[in-house]
Length: 307
Image 1: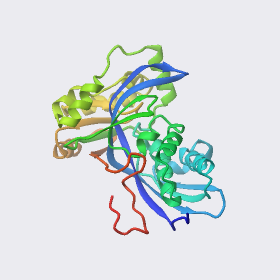
Image 2: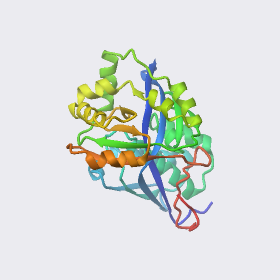
Image 3: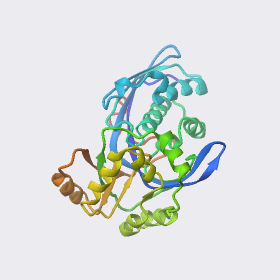
Image 4: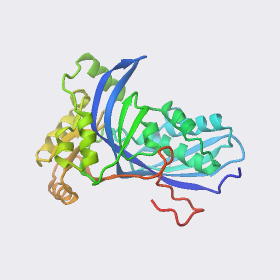
């Protein structure tokens, strides 16, 4: 099949409304987590090449300093070419998802590259694309479609959820990251006896039960993240000062989100915040379409496509 001239799409950030660690298997942690996409995104533009090379050019959020050997977008592109036997691509990524914040920026870039290349070269084997995404990171398969979902296993088991309402959060973003590996190691040294009721949270989401969602917000990595980075603890303290319905670290940090009942309350809190951290109001995004393919395609060849 002839390649398209170019594909441009958005790949969205996520927040962990709940994150449990349920054990380990084969050296990996097993998770039970409820995630939601939020309206912060990286833009991925892919143009075909006539050889098998993958060139990735990144700009924004300090991404220019990420070496190619540690760049998940590069890994995703090379893995795609190897798996599907296509030509390569020149890929341009404009980053708006903060780096090292637990918002899934690296996974979003990998998933965005896979989605873009699948669209570019007409690859429609969703199962193979999902397997490839899962090999690149615990939540990369989820990021192919995003939205509300419950993840289990290493993150490869994705249960899509639908919500009749959206949610708004105020993000507090410390300038320094938390090492994910160090965070899990610190958790292993002192496991948390508490656990979110992810099943109840999932049910509450699908019912549009705001109080039920807020009551089950929790992150098992919060305590080790705070120990590793004092800014995380401070961000939590400052977020709680606004009396949100719930508050937690997302991923392994360093970002903290405060859940409010409306976007207006988020903006009210943001306008009155006088601390040192960067803040952003974010709203959940519920995509539609096949789970393997991003619904946020902005294809230059299809002017009618909508985000």
